[in-house]
Image 1 (tube, rainbow, N blue to C red):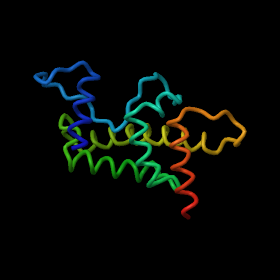
Image 2: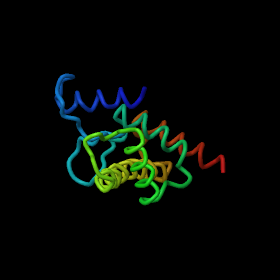
Image 3: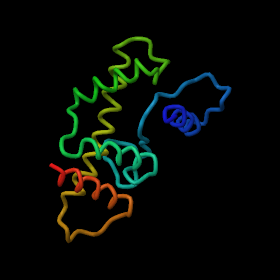
Length: 141
């Protein structure tokens, strides 16, 4: 399923072959720009955009708090073995905190772009799709 495909993509991105024993940290999203700033190209990148479409369809009306994200991700990491290289619950918590922060930053970027004035430039097709998802979620309230 999804986790196997995602793990294979992460291994490929890290330049690892199937026979390599190293396991890269699992991530639902890709960051390829350095630093804390999120850029549109990260939000519209195919894997990230797919993740954000699902995430925002669920949470656009109220993004999970840092603590909620951390707990859910820590549970998923332990329960589904997302990070088999992590041996202690505290290690899973650190990973979950970082992963949750990245997910939230990407979602907040899309939410901020959604809130821009309607006269602002149109943007990328994938960004416009995310805006439509956010609009639909908020109108459903």
